Length: 187
Image (cartoon, rainbow, N blue to C red; front, side, top):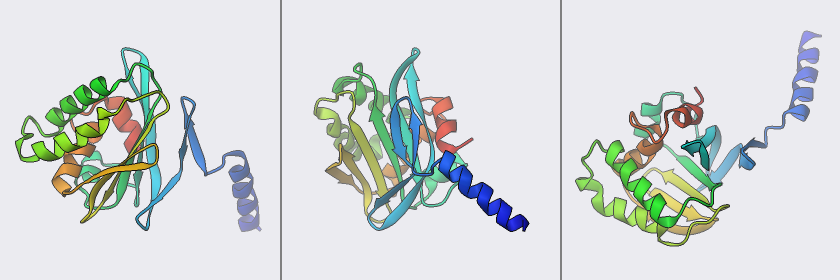
């Protein structure tokens, strides 16, 4: 009898709080992404802010939930990061500059071994960036990080070392924003 009541309560909660999407700052993030045969679940999401301005909504997707940022960075496992641009203030130049700074921090100033990969990644931001753009960064072991802008494939950059540096921008010890890092890992 208790099991029946629990199931009824659970189903009614699903109707009230659907598992299909999460809304942050007017951006709807899907709870699940499928890419290269991998099902990734939304680990966490949050708003990147600077000087009290909302810049973008980031979402972290993993195959298996893990609340340890360093283990997520180091994992050679499928995962994704999405960036939903919500500000007109983000330009290609500002995104490139911020990404350079992010790699500097995530590699602890030792960018040289990854410099070619970093330059290839930053070149994705050469095209104009406008409010509403969506960047998706999918990591697949042995393949690398595949980058999409508004659903259109842009580039794949190989290597676990590059993936670690890239995800370290948001999840590392010197992350872009500590509160966003905590939201992404689900703390």
